[in-house]
Length: 66
Image 1: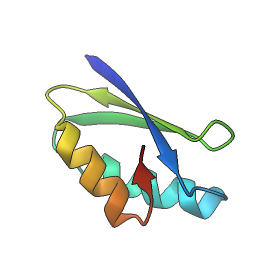
Image 2: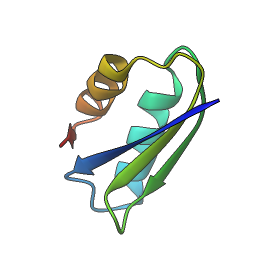
Image 3: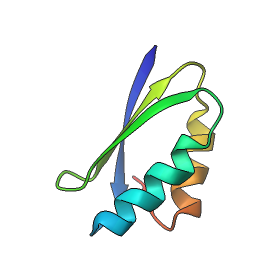
Image 4: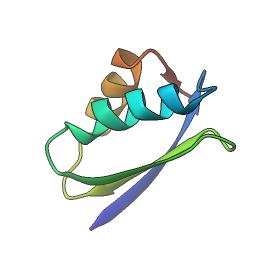
């Protein structure tokens, strides 16, 4: 299983965490999503997860990958 960490800006509350988790979890191959609000990171675990897909999902949730 692959693990990739993304730095995400704009997340400020648990609603933000839920929105990012929901969007990224829906991507093909994603097995788990762990959002660390304090550090502004999102850890995505899975097989053959598209980097572009993760970035687009975060954008769809209203945030940005740096």
